[in-house]
Image (cartoon, rainbow, N blue to C red; front, side, top):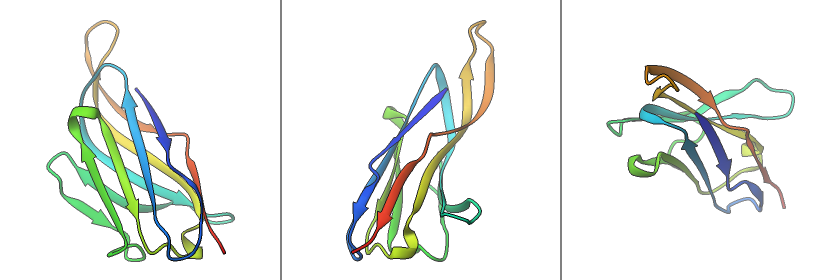
Length: 123
């Protein structure tokens, strides 16, 4: 299973960006998605998660500004980021947990990370 993240870029404070992350492979199900970020010199931190049932969790710092959503049929997750602040500057990573069919047809669990997409909030 591979994840491909996109949508990062340079935006002014107060602006918006939408990140996408698509999973590919012989996927059976994705039980949970997560967006994480890592700013320069800091540890990676959780931004938001969403389960297969649609339950969400947000970091306090982004609550009310960011929205995570998923389209199960497309094996894709989104992160809508509004009212961006300079402190949101980071590399954003998507994560997916689920199961897939191996080459031998065995259903196998996975926990996979995307490659990261850079978000810079600056005037």
